[in-house]
Image 1: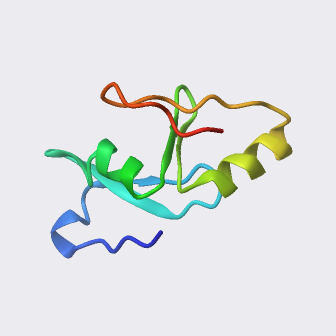
Image 2: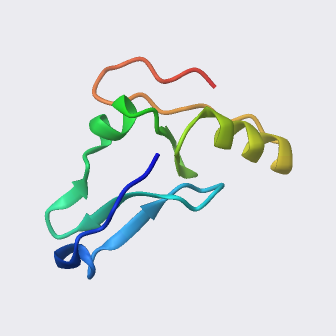
Image 3: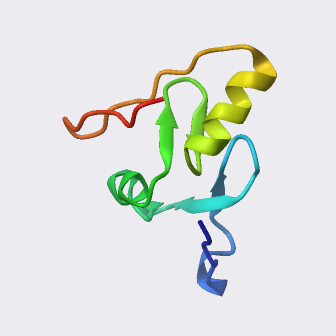
Length: 83
């Protein structure tokens, strides 16, 4: 998943995949761009108390490396993406 930052968003903190560090969104004064539901629609996975992953492959790699089983978080009443 590719995301390009605009110069006006340079001051905003990037939200990155917790495994591969790919930029997913920016978190600035206006909130998360793209929104959490848009990130989910693009295939990103949110995990409570861990953060965002760009997809299932990164979630799986994280689980293997740290020997944990992660439970994806549901957003806006939607079913979570299967882990």
